[in-house]
Image (cartoon, rainbow, N blue to C red; front, side, top):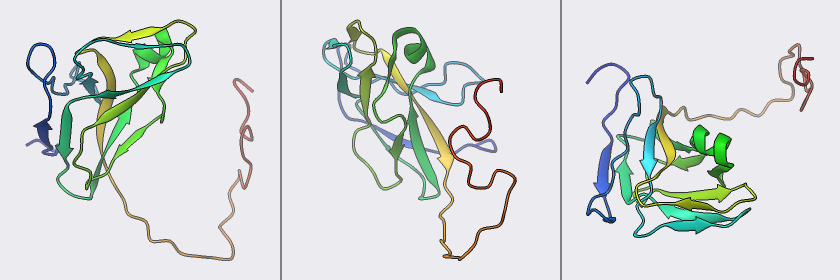
Length: 157
């Protein structure tokens, strides 16, 4: 394997209309995430402002606790149709071996239909650093300090 690659075991759990589960895939050579597809027996209609749990028919095994799989919305669905993930980003821990299920949310005033095999999300594999927390009385200072939301400006300010 090339540098910056990991081996992720994938188990197909279910079958959809053409008898296969669609494995995740990189849409282009420059893609950071692999597209995940809906493994459903029939279309799912998501009413406006509602969500549906959409299975992928896949379970994965990460090589070690040093990795996490993160499930992100597809920007095209979010930008064009207002369809995203209800949990913003899904976290697949290294010890989770169940089906990857995506809570797809329709933030659009129109119903949205997910068809069997539609690309619904994307999965990225990332390294994990485990933190050792140290309780202190003071933190080092910074230019921003404790400035919260909007403290660095809004838009082009």
